[in-house]
Image (cartoon, rainbow, N blue to C red; front, side):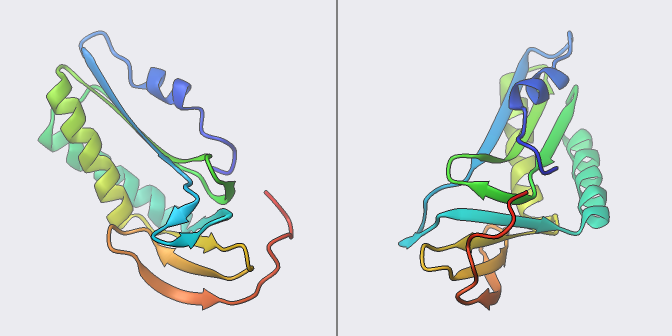
Length: 151
């Protein structure tokens, strides 16, 4: 998905009459990673595998919690500081279950789904990394033009 995430619609998509709790997680682009200033992020994914992994995560969530509905979406392309990059919404009969399932969903998504981000610095340098909880640099892209096409 390259267009902005409509997290209000995402939240409504998981609402069901038998669930009294909806947990929503929004990940946004921040301007600092450690001490490194970020001016924008680029996200890319291997879509067929990403969709497969998201379906596997949802299936696992359904075996562990009494969820009503689950929705997970991650943006691709260039995102400015402050934009929502990922959203997860989960409905369950009770809040503790909704919080637990939502946390599992985002943590597992970041660990397993093949999505990479490039953190772009003001000087034009950037690193592509997989967004696991302990990021590892895949490769460095020095001094690239930060202008270019915006999607």
